[in-house]
Each structure stands twice: as structure tokens, then as C-alpha cells.
Length: 105
Image (cartoon, rainbow, N blue to C red):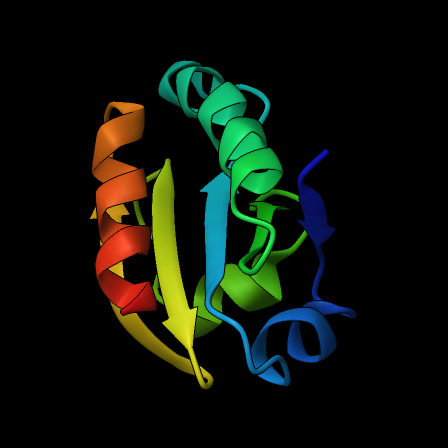
């Protein structure tokens, strides 16, 4: 199961990690987010050397504001505390996997 990032654990789990992090910003009421959710779960299971998780924007406004999240779903790819790529809007699994593979080399 993908990690749940919150305002209180985000720095420890994402920013302080030396691994690539994939962060899905979502909300329960968001239809396209429900399409991305299972993809994020699959990526979590398949990429053991990547930190993969989700941020519920309604319950964690601090992280959402920090990264200027205005549309969901938005998936940020964070490496060494810096956003190195992002995907705004729902996309097929191959899009996310391709970005991860490119950032792991």
C-alpha cells in the first residue's frame, strides 16, 4: 500500500530521503484522482527503491500550498528535496513509470 504523506511526516519521508519520491496529490471527491490511485499503488509495489505515496489535499493543506498545487491529480517527482518532474492530470501508468525510469538513471 502506498504511503500516506501528511503535513507532519512529509519532510521526514520525502525531503529527508535520499531516494526518489513520487507524490500523488489527490482528494476523495476527485474522479480523475480515483483513476490514478490504483496506478500509484502499483508503482509502490513495483519500485521498491522509490518512495511512493499520496497526499490528501483536503487534510494536508500545508504541503499543497508549499508546492502550489492548484489542480488534482498532480504527481510530483522529488529528488534530493527538489521537484525534478511533475504530471498534472490523469495519465496512463506508462507515463509515470517512464518518468521514474528516466530519473533513476
